Image (cartoon, rainbow, N blue to C red; front, side, top):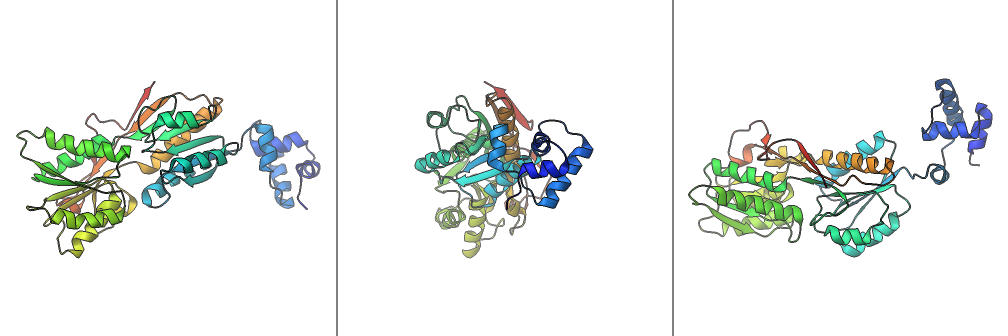
Length: 352
């Protein structure tokens, strides 16, 4: 039989309310009483009933997380940051992926409604105006890398344009003048901003003696591998390639290797994100570092702040800075990370 809170209270010689306070942590309880209650609960194998507790606290102690995908190191790192920070506050996660499908987003939000205290949503190819029309009005929500006008939501993003600009300027400083980019998917805000940063750097060079070559991509390793043949088909072919994310850069390295092209001897390669595997590929990948786990942790902090304030967001927009991480794939000697933002600073926050 399931042990009830009343049995724990009876054997610990305290009230039911005291047992509840011990497990919710909402009110002070003397240390000796807390210890006695927990010892009795452990002996009886008592587990608090989540649904019953939520009726009392009006909290589920659960955070919903909806990401475009769950595959790949980038999303694994985002989830890791979310888990570590949520755990500190006693929260659990409900995680799902949308594959950037509107109907999937609607269905997932409907499923999570009433089961979570707040929602972290990454949707770089979904307009925030649409989200505002579909999302529950009183549910605390933090958007990651949202597209368009973010309206009433709290948002956390990354300086994609500044990071891409810094990487392209680095390749230019190494003497490259024909620089290709493997773009991200159409309609994706992150991809669009990285493309803008690449273009900006090429146009910004005095003299204008640069050639930019754009190759379609979709943020997958396979797209990077396919891009290798397309890049080599150009005559003269580019001397450097900037892939809009590390997954494509790693696929590109494999494709160039299969075609007998030496990196960085014949073509320099760089990526974006600095996922954990980037330093272990051969040659180690030069990349724009995003604080990926911090992105997830910051989202939890902002979300729980809104939860504690009755669901009322502060409507801030934070932009996390990027860093240029130089490794062997670009042909330059490895060096310490350097800021990827033109104006520096690790985080900017603008209240709307």
